[in-house]
Image 1 (cartoon, helix red, strand yellow):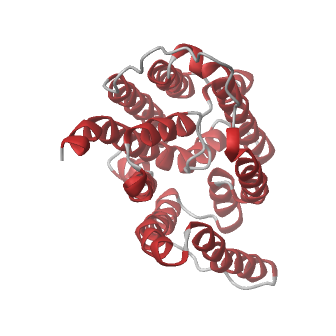
Image 2 (cartoon, helix red, strand yellow):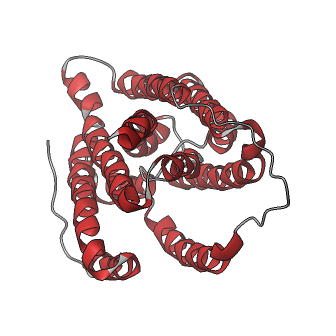
Amino acid sequence: MGRFGRQFKPVTCVVAARALRDFGDGFVAIVLPAYLLALGLTPFEVGLLSTVSLLGTACLTLAVGVFGPRFGIRQVLMAAAGLMTVTGLVFASVHVFAVLVGMAFLGTINPSAGSVSLSVPLEHAVLSGQVDDAIRTRIFARYSFAGAFAAALGALFASTPDLQVRAGIDRFSAISALFVLYAGLRLLVGLLYARIPKEPNTEPTEPVSVLGPSRSIVLRLAALFSLDAFAGGFVVQSLLALWLFERFQMSLSAAAMFFFWTGLLSALSFPVATWLSRRIGLVTTMVHSQIPSSIALILAAFWTCHGSVPVRFSC
């Protein structure tokens, strides 16, 4: 009980920060293409901005891995939250494409509504240092579930501009207000990060290998996740929302409902994966869980490419 009591506060802060962060990403990933189209940008420019954002995330994540230990995890997390706060305010107030592209790269606004953020590896480091081996998988499952469930709720929240339009509020202003809310959520995330205990500055007495005995495992997993992420890049949530808007003329509310249900199913998969991993192993669970999702994605592609009539959503 004493050990868990010492773990509880940092773990709670990280999980709560992940939930708030993913809630904001959940609605921004959907309203971002609608907002950019309303600004007069072309679908190509929307895709370019999303690509630049992901590229900026990759570069900053690499930089955090190299230089982050010099400043401390808590300080880097707070700086990242501050940067994303500025990003939300810039997107809400500046309508120049070049500025938005530059801010998307530096502020790494997330077009995928998933765990694509420079904060993710730092949060993982905090959790790994706070929990025992026996409960690590369970804690990470709760952390992932909290993020996925919050992202699903965020996707549902993306329907609020349509509701505000019915109340007589300008649609563009309603969407802009969501970016202000995004900035406010990032500010709250920064306050949660500030409650994480500062790690002591301990200099190693002798050179330490970066990966040590885990090097081969880490490299193989990195290669696997790179391939998976490359494939996932074709269906980034913002681009998928853009496709739904352009191909099916789907409303913002309908798209929000669509992504809410897919996000909710994704969130529910985490406790199931934890249960399976205790019986068949972590790697086996990870591999086998990809098979049905890949088959479903292939079937969806054939369904849309062979002349099937799409269902019209209305809200």
